[in-house]
Length: 485
Picture 1 (cartoon, rainbow, N blue to C red):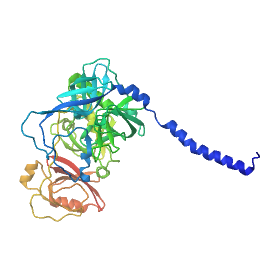
Picture 2 (cartoon, rainbow, N blue to C red):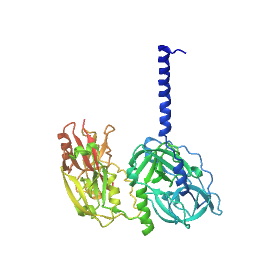
Picture 3 (cartoon, one colour):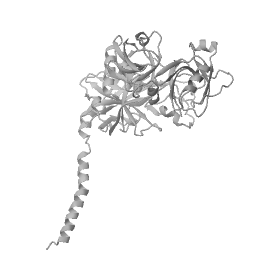
């Protein structure tokens, strides 16, 4: 058959299109990861954990449908544990206690003689713990120790020669890297899910000591305490929390880095408790506006809003308004970095704080103290207005008045003015009842003594000036920034 030039062109074009169409499919097939070997080698060390707890018998819960708004965002960070009876439930008539056995989570063996890591909330309040392996073996476990601040628990079964996991280095994880979770979601043993690392070093509400690994791995109730593997089959984290509006997986999962967990378990194994450092300061994030007010070149560090009286920081010379930019030579890029750095320092250690004060840095030496167990910070209650006649709002949209002698003694302050009214157009977290102690603008701090003096300071500022106010709210000092027009 004779091949004409036109037919030859058609064949070449057809071959090109076929190659292009097949090329991505072949490339995709080569690039997709294969988890089979990883699961076969590591799956035997992952266990299902169930507990027995006694609870009073309750009538069924009444239907409830709360309207949850955006302000409740942080409430969606959930740990997986069945909740106690709610307000819509009431006890049954007197009778014997009920014992419930529920699959609460997962865990993994870290040593052949029976030590197992899981989440603290998985075993919290358990009267009996049962560990089940993939080969159906079951053991009763005892709690060696738990640490609620990191949500890590160490339990032990009486056995030897158990399969164990290998450990990786979370610091070498790269965003976009494939990771695998093995656990028991809803009680389905050894369920495998996969995804990628979405972010590293995440800070979550009320979680000051864990730089979480964020992934999009499918995590559901029962996965808590299970391992997160890298593609080399090494454990890099413990699955702990999700963000969810439904209670189920929505693509945002968080794992405790394994190096954090291993440090905790070592202390639990040797001492039965975890020792952490503290320096006695209340801190807040440094926003762009705060950085401008304090003359800081860029928004970084931890702004000290309050210093504990006679605490380590006060003895070292730290003052409210200082911005801690380094701890023992390590940069504090965000305020959430400091609690982890200080918490990981052994009590009694002398550490160097580099602080930004009045446009320059200086080094202070602080002796780290020990953080008390289960120290809980209470939320500040909003103060009520003092009932004085309504004052005229300044150009920022809020009004102040002088403090009465009684109020000054009550608040334990030497000067300041009280906020009487805040108009809706004020774009700052300023509240009626707040006491303004000082005003900071262009790197200069001025103590506030009276309402007249404060209003004159405000009036003298440029219209576009950024102002930072040191505020006493309840028993807490904080800094509030207001930007001009």
